[in-house]
Length: 190
Image 1 (cartoon, rainbow, N blue to C red):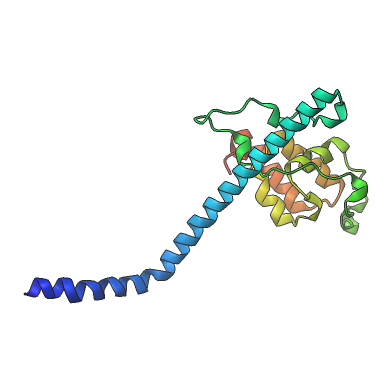
Image 2 (image 1 turned 90 degrees about the horizontal axis):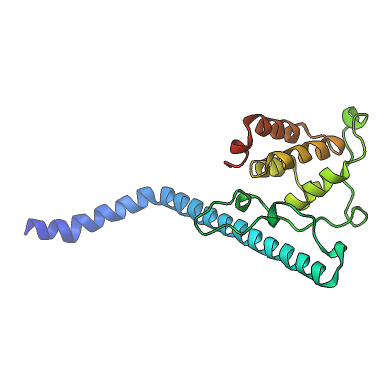
């Protein structure tokens, strides 16, 4: 009789108390898991869409013999990875090419102390930054820093050149330098 009472009364009460006590932790774990899964799905989706967009654009350029319609060759021109291969670019936030400078809103003015060091942006660096970080000029330093870990060494150097010639934000320049010092394996580990 005691076992029946334990199973019918004490066990449900114990489970209810445990759930109430552990509910905030369970919610936090569930939220973190869902957010991570959604973030991963968005990255993969953007990668696939961007890669196919480049292939279609390149193919149309070949068909119509229009060099301007072909996007610049870059990391997306690599052969498609097999299901078992890991592709470092899959973790990178991908973006459509930036619109011409005339259609973008101007970047905020550089601080007075660094204005004398700022030069005209390097066109090659600007193109690379525009390809790998959508709307770079509208992102805060903390948003850019979070995305730097997914970039390769060439892209990190382009960010350094572009940032150094525009807003010259120390946070971004320092983090890009740290990632370059750590080497390419560390740059793709994030």
